[in-house]
Image 1 (spheres, rainbow, N blue to C red):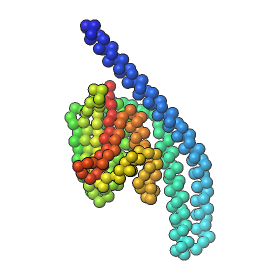
Image 2 (tube, helix red, strand yellow):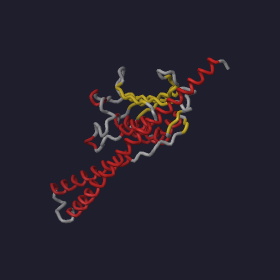
Image 3 (tube, one colour):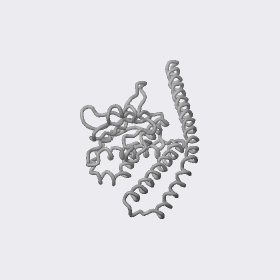
Image 4 (cartoon, helix red, strand yellow):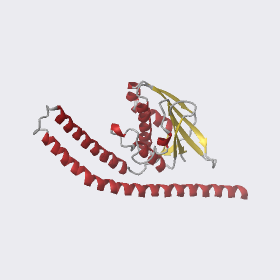
Length: 259
């Protein structure tokens, strides 16, 4: 080996070490952030869930003491019960989000995980007449991921697309290998639908904590926030945009190839 080859090898090893340190630091920062959220969520749960349970018991008791046959009384009581249960669900979802466990990384085939995730939502896809097309590039490298968490991301994104197209539509899923600006091999996953798209103002806030366009339906907006958190934990990137040449939304996820 020449001196120049030896130098290049050392530079390559140094760059890998720097990348590993950056990833470790990002993981540590994310863990600290999640710890703070977890402590806040459990405090909030104690202060809110217990009083909600007492209020719900009180409302249930009232149903035995008032004339539920009276439409105005009956509908008011039911509305109160629904509101209490919705608030309780908000706290439960927040606890689930805050208790996110550390990553369990292993090399995995993203195409296989995507197929498995599609199978998990197959009933929803068929019920809403959603057509799936796959375009998986052959020979795409394995990725270093937590398989369960990435499956959670994909199921969430597929269900979001279904909700955007309740009367039917198409979802296209593509997987390919790409190079980063630094020349590193990455794996790109694209999911796009032909639904109505997202208002531009909402696109800017789509990954914000608790943001949702479906709050009136009981959705509290943890879905995309959770998705971004998981992708961030992997040191990956996620982008959400309206398609320029067609209706619908395109989501792009970039993950590092496995070592």
